[in-house]
Image 1 (tube, helix red, strand yellow):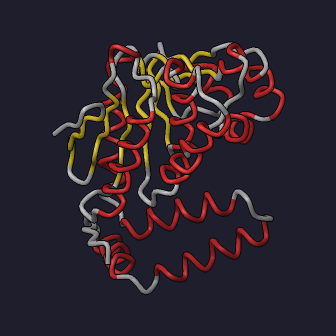
Image 2: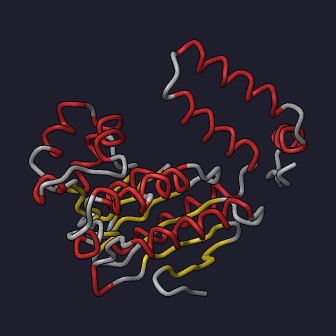
Length: 258
Protein backbone atom coordinates (compact mmCIF):
# COMPACT_ATOMS: atom_id res chain seq x y z
CA UNK A 1 0.00 0.00 0.00
CA UNK A 2 1.42 3.41 -0.86
CA UNK A 3 0.73 7.09 -1.32
CA UNK A 4 2.59 9.52 -3.51
CA UNK A 5 5.42 10.16 -1.04
CA UNK A 6 4.64 7.95 1.96
CA UNK A 7 4.61 4.18 1.58
CA UNK A 8 2.65 2.20 4.16
CA UNK A 9 3.73 -1.32 5.09
CA UNK A 10 2.67 -3.91 7.67
CA UNK A 11 5.85 -5.92 8.33
CA UNK A 12 4.64 -7.66 11.51
CA UNK A 13 1.47 -8.15 13.51
CA UNK A 14 0.49 -4.91 15.20
CA UNK A 15 3.29 -2.98 13.46
CA UNK A 16 2.83 -0.26 10.84
CA UNK A 17 5.86 1.00 8.90
CA UNK A 18 5.64 4.45 7.30
CA UNK A 19 8.33 5.00 4.69
CA UNK A 20 9.23 8.45 3.34
CA UNK A 21 9.64 8.00 -0.41
CA UNK A 22 11.26 10.96 -2.16
CA UNK A 23 14.52 9.36 -3.33
CA UNK A 24 15.15 12.11 -5.88
CA UNK A 25 15.35 14.64 -3.01
CA UNK A 26 16.97 12.43 -0.34
CA UNK A 27 13.56 12.24 1.31
CA UNK A 28 13.48 15.97 2.04
CA UNK A 29 10.41 16.94 4.04
CA UNK A 30 8.21 19.12 1.86
CA UNK A 31 4.77 20.18 3.05
CA UNK A 32 3.07 17.31 1.21
CA UNK A 33 5.20 14.76 3.08
CA UNK A 34 4.65 16.47 6.44
CA UNK A 35 0.87 16.47 5.95
CA UNK A 36 0.83 12.87 4.77
CA UNK A 37 2.86 11.79 7.79
CA UNK A 38 0.38 13.46 10.13
CA UNK A 39 -2.51 11.81 8.28
CA UNK A 40 -0.98 8.33 8.47
CA UNK A 41 0.17 8.68 12.08
CA UNK A 42 -3.33 9.84 13.06
CA UNK A 43 -4.75 6.78 11.29
CA UNK A 44 -2.33 4.55 13.23
CA UNK A 45 -3.32 6.24 16.48
CA UNK A 46 -7.00 5.54 15.82
CA UNK A 47 -6.50 1.92 14.71
CA UNK A 48 -6.54 -0.55 17.63
CA UNK A 49 -4.84 -3.09 15.38
CA UNK A 50 -1.73 -0.90 15.21
CA UNK A 51 0.28 -1.05 18.40
CA UNK A 52 3.64 0.38 17.28
CA UNK A 53 4.78 2.58 14.40
CA UNK A 54 8.14 2.50 12.61
CA UNK A 55 9.28 5.52 10.56
CA UNK A 56 11.86 4.88 7.86
CA UNK A 57 13.41 6.29 4.72
CA UNK A 58 15.80 4.42 2.44
CA UNK A 59 19.43 3.31 2.51
CA UNK A 60 20.71 6.79 1.59
CA UNK A 61 18.55 8.99 3.78
CA UNK A 62 16.01 8.83 6.56
CA UNK A 63 15.25 12.45 5.67
CA UNK A 64 17.92 14.90 4.59
CA UNK A 65 16.07 17.92 5.98
CA UNK A 66 13.35 20.32 4.94
CA UNK A 67 12.78 21.05 1.27
CA UNK A 68 14.88 24.22 0.91
CA UNK A 69 13.61 24.96 -2.60
CA UNK A 70 10.05 25.04 -1.25
CA UNK A 71 10.83 27.60 1.45
CA UNK A 72 13.64 29.73 -0.02
CA UNK A 73 11.37 32.51 -1.30
CA UNK A 74 8.79 32.43 1.48
CA UNK A 75 8.02 35.37 3.76
CA UNK A 76 7.10 35.47 7.43
CA UNK A 77 3.33 35.34 6.94
CA UNK A 78 3.55 32.49 4.45
CA UNK A 79 5.73 30.48 6.83
CA UNK A 80 3.24 31.08 9.64
CA UNK A 81 0.34 29.94 7.46
CA UNK A 82 2.09 26.65 6.69
CA UNK A 83 1.55 25.62 10.31
CA UNK A 84 4.62 23.40 10.52
CA UNK A 85 4.69 23.55 14.33
CA UNK A 86 1.11 22.27 14.47
CA UNK A 87 2.08 19.37 12.19
CA UNK A 88 5.04 18.49 14.42
CA UNK A 89 2.81 18.70 17.50
CA UNK A 90 0.28 16.36 15.91
CA UNK A 91 3.06 13.88 15.15
CA UNK A 92 4.48 14.08 18.68
CA UNK A 93 1.00 13.65 20.18
CA UNK A 94 0.55 10.08 18.92
CA UNK A 95 -0.22 7.75 21.86
CA UNK A 96 1.36 4.84 19.99
CA UNK A 97 5.10 4.28 20.46
CA UNK A 98 7.15 5.29 17.43
CA UNK A 99 10.54 3.96 16.37
CA UNK A 100 12.81 5.79 13.92
CA UNK A 101 14.80 3.43 11.68
CA UNK A 102 17.61 5.70 10.50
CA UNK A 103 19.91 4.92 7.63
CA UNK A 104 21.98 7.56 5.84
CA UNK A 105 21.21 11.21 6.45
CA UNK A 106 18.95 12.49 9.24
CA UNK A 107 19.61 16.21 9.01
CA UNK A 108 17.61 19.30 9.90
CA UNK A 109 13.94 18.39 9.83
CA UNK A 110 14.91 14.75 9.42
CA UNK A 111 16.89 14.85 12.64
CA UNK A 112 13.95 16.57 14.32
CA UNK A 113 11.54 13.92 13.02
CA UNK A 114 13.73 11.18 14.47
CA UNK A 115 13.78 13.05 17.79
CA UNK A 116 9.96 13.00 17.86
CA UNK A 117 10.13 9.22 18.05
CA UNK A 118 10.42 7.24 21.26
CA UNK A 119 13.24 4.96 20.12
CA UNK A 120 15.93 5.61 17.49
CA UNK A 121 17.68 2.69 15.79
CA UNK A 122 20.56 3.93 13.63
CA UNK A 123 22.80 2.29 11.07
CA UNK A 124 26.58 2.50 11.34
CA UNK A 125 26.74 5.00 8.47
CA UNK A 126 23.89 7.25 9.67
CA UNK A 127 24.63 10.96 9.96
CA UNK A 128 22.71 13.30 12.23
CA UNK A 129 22.78 17.07 12.49
CA UNK A 130 21.00 20.42 12.60
CA UNK A 131 22.69 22.38 9.79
CA UNK A 132 20.11 25.19 9.62
CA UNK A 133 22.63 27.77 10.83
CA UNK A 134 24.52 27.29 7.56
CA UNK A 135 21.63 28.71 5.54
CA UNK A 136 20.88 31.60 7.86
CA UNK A 137 18.04 30.14 9.92
CA UNK A 138 17.56 28.00 13.02
CA UNK A 139 15.84 24.66 13.61
CA UNK A 140 12.07 25.09 13.68
CA UNK A 141 10.78 21.62 14.45
CA UNK A 142 12.08 21.27 17.99
CA UNK A 143 15.79 20.92 17.24
CA UNK A 144 16.92 23.57 19.71
CA UNK A 145 14.80 22.07 22.48
CA UNK A 146 14.70 18.28 22.03
CA UNK A 147 18.37 18.00 21.07
CA UNK A 148 19.30 19.98 24.19
CA UNK A 149 17.09 17.74 26.35
CA UNK A 150 18.67 14.64 24.84
CA UNK A 151 22.37 15.50 24.89
CA UNK A 152 22.71 18.53 27.18
CA UNK A 153 23.31 22.23 26.56
CA UNK A 154 27.02 22.23 25.80
CA UNK A 155 26.97 19.36 23.32
CA UNK A 156 23.82 20.73 21.68
CA UNK A 157 25.32 24.19 21.30
CA UNK A 158 28.40 22.66 19.70
CA UNK A 159 26.31 21.24 16.86
CA UNK A 160 23.54 23.85 16.65
CA UNK A 161 25.99 26.75 16.29
CA UNK A 162 28.28 25.08 13.75
CA UNK A 163 25.81 22.96 11.82
CA UNK A 164 28.34 20.12 11.88
CA UNK A 165 26.96 16.60 11.41
CA UNK A 166 27.72 13.82 13.86
CA UNK A 167 27.93 10.07 13.46
CA UNK A 168 25.57 7.38 14.73
CA UNK A 169 28.20 6.27 17.26
CA UNK A 170 28.59 9.84 18.54
CA UNK A 171 24.80 10.15 18.73
CA UNK A 172 24.64 6.94 20.75
CA UNK A 173 27.40 8.10 23.11
CA UNK A 174 25.60 11.40 23.69
CA UNK A 175 22.28 9.69 24.41
CA UNK A 176 20.37 10.67 21.26
CA UNK A 177 20.31 7.21 19.67
CA UNK A 178 18.96 4.08 21.38
CA UNK A 179 21.06 1.55 19.45
CA UNK A 180 23.50 1.39 16.54
CA UNK A 181 23.44 -1.67 14.29
CA UNK A 182 24.79 -2.65 10.88
CA UNK A 183 23.11 -0.67 8.10
CA UNK A 184 21.36 -3.71 6.66
CA UNK A 185 19.98 -4.60 10.10
CA UNK A 186 18.35 -1.24 10.87
CA UNK A 187 14.85 -1.93 9.61
CA UNK A 188 14.68 -5.62 10.62
CA UNK A 189 15.88 -4.71 14.11
CA UNK A 190 13.44 -1.79 14.41
CA UNK A 191 10.56 -4.01 13.25
CA UNK A 192 11.60 -6.76 15.69
CA UNK A 193 11.54 -4.29 18.60
CA UNK A 194 8.21 -2.92 17.37
CA UNK A 195 6.77 -6.44 17.24
CA UNK A 196 7.90 -7.08 20.82
CA UNK A 197 6.23 -3.86 21.94
CA UNK A 198 3.10 -4.76 19.96
CA UNK A 199 2.84 -8.01 21.93
CA UNK A 200 2.75 -6.12 25.25
CA UNK A 201 -0.36 -4.69 26.87
CA UNK A 202 -1.27 -1.67 24.74
CA UNK A 203 -2.77 0.00 27.81
CA UNK A 204 0.49 -0.31 29.76
CA UNK A 205 2.50 0.80 26.72
CA UNK A 206 0.34 3.89 26.32
CA UNK A 207 0.63 4.73 30.02
CA UNK A 208 4.42 4.42 29.94
CA UNK A 209 4.70 6.78 26.96
CA UNK A 210 2.29 9.27 28.51
CA UNK A 211 3.93 9.27 31.95
CA UNK A 212 7.47 9.57 30.55
CA UNK A 213 6.63 12.48 28.24
CA UNK A 214 4.48 14.37 30.74
CA UNK A 215 6.85 13.68 33.60
CA UNK A 216 9.80 15.23 31.77
CA UNK A 217 8.24 18.67 32.22
CA UNK A 218 7.19 18.16 35.84
CA UNK A 219 8.95 18.46 39.19
CA UNK A 220 10.08 14.99 40.29
CA UNK A 221 7.54 14.66 43.10
CA UNK A 222 4.62 15.49 40.80
CA UNK A 223 5.94 13.11 38.13
CA UNK A 224 6.21 10.30 40.68
CA UNK A 225 2.60 10.90 41.69
CA UNK A 226 1.58 10.70 38.03
CA UNK A 227 3.47 7.42 37.68
CA UNK A 228 1.83 5.91 40.77
CA UNK A 229 -1.68 6.87 39.66
CA UNK A 230 -1.07 5.37 36.20
CA UNK A 231 0.10 2.14 37.87
CA UNK A 232 -3.01 2.00 40.05
CA UNK A 233 -5.23 2.64 37.02
CA UNK A 234 -3.83 -0.43 35.25
CA UNK A 235 -5.03 -2.66 38.09
CA UNK A 236 -8.57 -2.20 36.74
CA UNK A 237 -7.63 -3.77 33.38
CA UNK A 238 -8.00 -7.33 32.09
CA UNK A 239 -4.43 -7.11 30.77
CA UNK A 240 -3.06 -6.74 34.31
CA UNK A 241 -4.97 -9.81 35.45
CA UNK A 242 -3.84 -11.77 32.38
CA UNK A 243 -0.21 -10.68 32.72
CA UNK A 244 0.10 -11.66 36.36
CA UNK A 245 -1.85 -14.91 35.88
CA UNK A 246 0.46 -15.85 33.00
CA UNK A 247 3.51 -15.13 35.15
CA UNK A 248 2.20 -17.33 37.98
CA UNK A 249 1.20 -20.10 35.54
CA UNK A 250 4.56 -19.89 33.70
CA UNK A 251 3.09 -19.18 30.26
CA UNK A 252 3.18 -16.36 27.75
CA UNK A 253 0.47 -13.72 28.30
CA UNK A 254 -2.03 -12.81 25.60
CA UNK A 255 -2.95 -9.16 25.97
CA UNK A 256 -6.28 -7.93 24.63
CA UNK A 257 -5.99 -4.21 25.30
CA UNK A 258 -8.90 -4.32 27.76
